[in-house]
Image 1: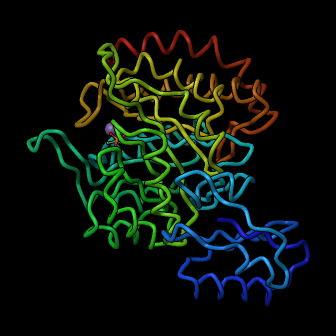
Image 2: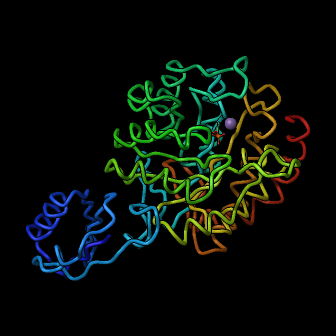
Image 3: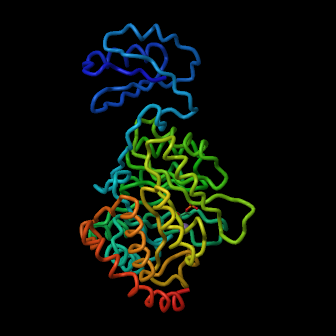
Length: 373
Ligand code: PEP
Ligand code: MN
């Protein structure tokens, strides 16, 4: 249920409605808009007579929220939420690219990748220190040592970083280092983890579960918002279907569905979504055309020898081409690329570079692809 306050309702009136809602057994989530304040009343009590509230001073009307998810819903908040990762806004007009190796392997690999993705125009570094692997015998990540490396690279390059947290026990440690916490596909419905990650107040990148409906995904995000943390970015990364020619089936329709129903930013991960570096560029372009607010892309200086997800990782030179192509699509759909502190891909300059860059990178990419994959 939403309590819509009259324009000009005072802080005291808002506080009084919140207090009344709490007395009635609801959690009150005020959202202060430019013109009006609305208060989300969240609880599992089915019936609440609107008379209990409608006569309170400052209240304009009471509106039910029809969707099962409430706080993430556009019914409650119809302006886009902007999430800030180390000062980089995600969810505004500009597209944000998070890139880096699947797993942090060593300092040289991480520095090389970070400088390469930054030079190409990525604004956020992504690297895993705790890795969820299908086999217990695969590389599981460098854990705290990996987090320390990510922090050193951030210091040198100025790139904020996002990294996965796998377990509630690691939340304080990962939150101490990271600019944003990733909750992976396999943990999308680990409800304790969602709550604890939310409670840190850090931005959370929530990947879609491999077998989750959009509604289940939004309900998972609801757990994080329910902790009082609105800084959530959704990430479509492909779902399991009968199709076997790609690792997963990248569901770009989900981007449109999320945009229709939620105010949260949504980005797309074409690396896990396809599992093959050859398909990453076309799906990255398509994701931006479909309305995604950004991308998460795996990049490795030597994909053939990567300890994790090499076949879907781009060589840095191919990543340059991706950035050029994505910039062109972003401009075509009325958006640009967010700038990082050193980024060469900014506004008008970026636009010029697109035209200049495409053919040059094409030749290089063919060469690199043969060598790297
Ligand atoms: C990853 O981002 O490297 C990862 C393991 O992703 P997902 O949870 O989407 O499989
Ligand atoms: Mn990966």
